[in-house]
Structure formats: C-alpha cells, structure tokens
Image (cartoon, rainbow, N blue to C red; front, side, top):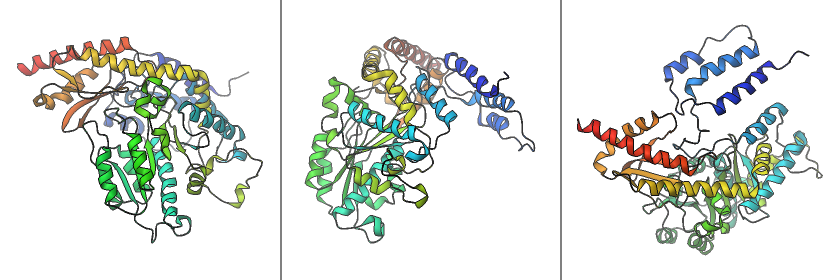
Length: 465
C-alpha cells in the first residue's frame, strides 16, 4: 500500500540523523541568511508536503542551536528525552485539545496521574493542585494569580467581583536579583513598580531574611513574598524556613520560583538546601529543564486548590461540564486551547522512574562539583559561586581582563563539542555554565575544563602580541 504520509517518514529519518549527528552546537547562519531562506514571497498554489518538509529542514539547519547536545552549557535547557519526543509526536498525531475532560479524556487523566507523581517526587503537600503550562514564566503567573485573589480576600476585597479597582495596595517582596520571569508575570497580573519591593540580596543573588523583615515592617495590607530555589546564575537557595516564618507573621502568601532548583527535593543530600520550601503556598517549576521534557512544559503547583481554581476557572454553557468527568485542565491554567502536555510528562517519568530522576539530578550536581575541582588547577580562571547544584559562574581571576570574556566565549564555541554564552553578573563579565543535559557526565566536564585552560592560554598569547 502506498505510504499516505511520506512527510512523516521523512521527519522520522531526519530525527535519527539529527539527534545522533555531529553538527555544530551553535547556529552558524546569519540573520540575513535565515531571512533569505524563510522570508519568501507567498506562493499562490500549494506545494507537495514532503517537498515543503525538505525545504523547512534546509532553511532551518543553519539556525538551529543544539541544546539537546550534552556540551550545551549556555542556558538551563534540558535535552528533550527521546521518550518524551516520541510521546510529543503522538500529541501532534492525536491532535487533542486538552481544555476539558470531554475534549480529551485520556489527556485529562494523564494529567491526574502526573500531578500525583510530581507531588510525590517533589515531596509537596499531596492535596495541592497542578497546572500544566508552557514553562516557569506561566507557572509563576498561575501561582501569583492565585496569590493575588487570596491575599486580597484576606483583606475583605473580592477580586472576582471588582478586580483591582479600589483594591488595597498589594506589596510584593522579591530579591533584587530574582529572575526576570517573575517581574514579567507580575506585570501581566496588573502589578506595577509601586507594588514591588526589591529586597537586598547577598553575593549569590539571594534575598536576605533580615532585609526582608525590615521591608515587611514598613508596609501593611496584602502581601506576597517570592523566593528562589535555584538562582539562575549561582544555583543558590534562599532561607525558606526564615522566609516562611515571616510569611506567617505577616499573613503573606509565599511563592517559590523553583524553575530547576525545585528538583533538588529528590536528593536526600540536598535536604538542607530545600528545608522549609514545602511550607510555601505555591511553586513554579519547568518540565523542559531537569525533567528533560520537550518544549513547552512547566508546572504551577498551588497548596490551596480553591484559590487556584478561583483564579483560572472558565465558565461557559457550551463547555457542558459533567460532574462525573475527570480533571478539567482549563480549571487550572490560563489556556482553553492547548497541547496535551501530560502525555510526554507521563511517558518520561514512567521511563526514568523515581530512581532514574534521582540518578540524573545527582549526576549533574556531581559533574558540576567535578568541574569546579578541575578548574581550581586552571591558572587564570576562578569559580565565583559555591557550587550547591548544577550551576557555575566562571570568571577571570584578574577582573581587568573581563573585557576579553566575549572573545573567550567565542573561541570556546569554535569547538564543535561545547557551547557557552557570556553574561554580566554582579558587575563582572562571566561565563554561566549550566549542566542540565541528561547525557552530560563527569568525563565530559573534565574535557571541558581542559579545553577552557587551553583556550585561555591561546587568548593570552594573542593578547600579549
């Protein structure tokens, strides 16, 4: 029988070659070259699908960043577990809109299962509710939307009835070095600069409880505190025990930005870092980071399901919700039309199992420590942060050389096996190294440390000429 879907067969063959290939990790096509390949005149007549897929592969090939490669250290991006990719193909093949149970019953129940597994793995309150969203930004949005309604209700304001009009001022406390996604989520929720109190941070970018206490004492009314589990640069964790105590004293909602750091909860040896985190009211975490799910994937977890659903539930007669239905995903997230994100999460967690997830997180933390130790013998480089997790901040020992960091990064990226990006942090030009690919191991990091030393020698030789 003639194959009815030759385009799908072509993508399968390409997938095998792409994931096992040795192409450069960094994109090597310029913006101008990509525009020439993509920005064509709109064709009047349709084209053969298989031909269009070939065109797409050719047009995109020079502009792909291989964040699925084990040597990709530039950002905290997972490697898209092949099991998750296969499940995600099924998501597209099945074409389910997982808005409500009736539109996609299997997707809804898969989310029920994954929700229970996540709360178990992360050791969070078992009766919490979970939203399946695009990533930590939207997870923060969902958690903070629940917080907004809840803290206003504590002060007699009915947000559902009158919105923010006439509402008491909500004060939101966050480290002055917190991730930008939190500020974006707050803006989406109608909060401005006057609502946000930036609290002084320490050298790791972490909010200091004493500074938070002083700020809390200066404000009255509804309050929300956003804390960090896994700082995007240093990988550090805030003092959740102290922060949660202040939350109780001031009747504040505590939200934890745990985009990748929340997964430290699976390691017994990291218990000290996450102690008290379970006392929060909501948590945001990515799936496409440490869990290695395909993009897009994130989870908003809220201790109070009623506050969660008040912020997100959608009512319409045509939805025709039956009391006997299973989970209705639209009750927990902002979308009514959305991918069935639970399938890939279900497949990857089943594939890895509890032990596999623990082993992966532990291996990455161990590899980060090994890289730190290897770099201690590389003259001219230093690691600026205590390596608590999988993040390293690498800088020149002589800060007068900081201006050379972009060139240093460029030379590193000429090696097909590694990809880094320079960044500015705490007035320094640095390299942020994120060890997050499930395929990264200690042997790779030893080679990376050696290569950094060799590249620095070359750079110094050029600069001295």
